[in-house]
Length: 374
Image 1 (cartoon, rainbow, N blue to C red):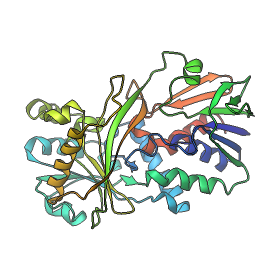
Image 2 (image 1 turned 180 degrees about the vertical axis):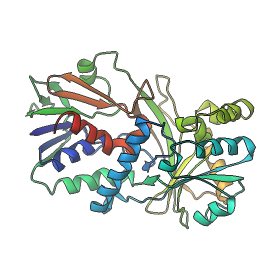
Image 3 (image 1 turned 45 degrees about the vertical axis):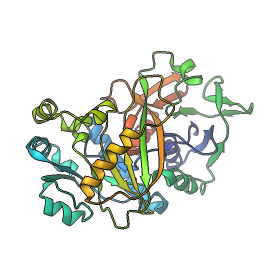
Image 4 (image 1 turned 90 degrees about the horizontal axis):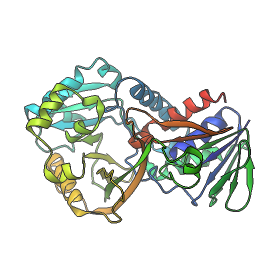
């Protein structure tokens, strides 16, 4: 079988990986010299903790297994099973953490409620004050800026894999063939469009204007090296408001009696923080849903994140090295893991994983391979 994959972000690259692993010939086409979208502009988290029960959690757990397997073969991914801690303060936040630990699927996630001393034994960098911490053992991390490069370097070892950068696919020709903006036609047995947040142009022509996917914008930042290990990923209790796993009466009570402060509420914020291989911290994020998106970044969200991080670390944050904005595609029905649609004979569109893209992409691609009979 010959598989044409359009898009070299993490979802597209994992589809290429699954096809090559099954012995198929793959041509992967990318309009940039390298992917520059949400696949690089994220935390690199393999984030199991907050996923909704059922299909979403099962997908995340399967993806976690696949990331570990691939990471063992491709050290450049920087895969590490670091887990996560969410420090909580006060009875209202604590009650949400307790409700999470009481979930039937808590053991699958590796949830534990830790005392401050237990949390600091696990992550000594957390010197600030907090009442307890929710630990998720199944969370992990990779290096988002280099993961696709490392995967591609491994793929290029196979004679069955070809990477064609700097080519934008403009047209579907007949069955299972596309034409790029160089005028070249790439024919195969199946075409998989993994175009990320690029939802106009050819995607709109193929899928129609009612594609049930929206674009979401975020702001993030990265610091100079911390100077010490941050041994787990770290979230704050605002992540309880964002992730479906924490839905409970306790969360309703938290929202009613202790709403988010203005800046966090205005920008739909949560704290997520991961240490990079160079020691720096990736910190975010915000969520912007209304179009047109801003073209600039705002300082108030960064100030809020800095304050929250410093309160957990009990020390000043290192110098901010980078700030950026990114855009990802999310199913409008956020309970759906991904939008997978046959848009022409032999042509499939796979998009809309939202903030789950980095986490779930290996399992999303595996499901595509099984459904298409690769």
